[in-house]
Length: 486
Image (cartoon, rainbow, N blue to C red; front, side, top):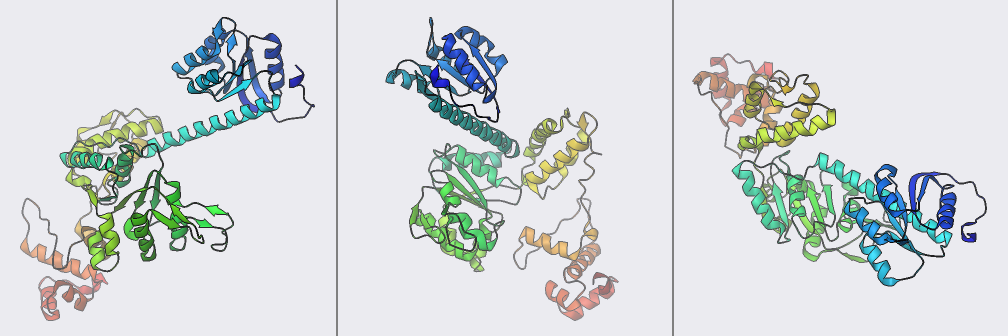
């Protein structure tokens, strides 16, 4: 086979396994000898049935398959391999340039079609391209599996409140409108956005995530809309596509939309209205077909009233709203979620934990879970890692402790007030079902005010909307020294 004779060149042997299925002994032996200089393992089998039988053992990364194999047809062999779940690339070889045969081969999943007499350079290019594509597919599969572990598609919803959210999300998925997802941090807003994308007509297109609060302000525009060479110092690429271009025909998820800088709020509004934008430093208008799903843990309507968020953008985003209730309001979901996380971390840490002791279940259900599902997942990860028995005990979860108000600093009180987002003039009060002393409530209120103002009596009086004299009198009655809070 003169076509396989090339100058002797020292090459690096690639770590791939190739299988040649060819009943012509001269061609089969020649291909095996030549390709063995380039690939670590090259097997040649002249019999089609033998090739199918040994396929699971040989585990080739690529197959060179002749169509005419005596009484067997190579395309039937290819169809059998595909039906058995083998996805490795197959390059079909034939002595005839038959268009119908080539079409059938491609429909069956053949990577390429080579006609005899074989052009060795064409064969080399076809093999290298097929192996490269195969590696890319496997890499994507691994990334998808990793994504599935970190962001599982299945949303566990036992509570009626969350089931209602999912039902509405599925309805909205079909109408291709902008969606705004609200809810506290850790409730699973990105997971719900993925759920919408997966049930939409865009499911096969990209789902692109961008955290508006994590992008440096000076890079936000180029991150969203891309840039062209010379747009700024260091912009050396001729064209660098932004997230909106990468999400074309798919969905872009704008997490923490409330953190988007005002100048970018204007540009985002134009994209939502016109479905077009300009790259940074570019002159050509870019058209995109993108569905926008935004999420926030803040009250956008209040931000609009405070002048911190554009009103026109708010109304453009506020077309369809999904609110995810916090975990503490749907306790029916806590144990199913915790059980699912145990299964997840059993696999990761090679553990065999079967579940929870009754006392541990009681703790899980009574804990406030201010960090919602994210906090629950982190807690279960820690518990699975630490647990030595077959069930998670209350002792293993002992790190889940609530603190008394007396242990909380003034700064933390303000943080809590912000988290509850109490409007001016409103308050939050919780008392024991066993009763509480009126004097203790007043004393605690005064102490909270002093903690929040770091012992400043005048500020504390304004905080409580009473006169300084009245506050000082109350402090004397309850024997409270403001200096201890400074």
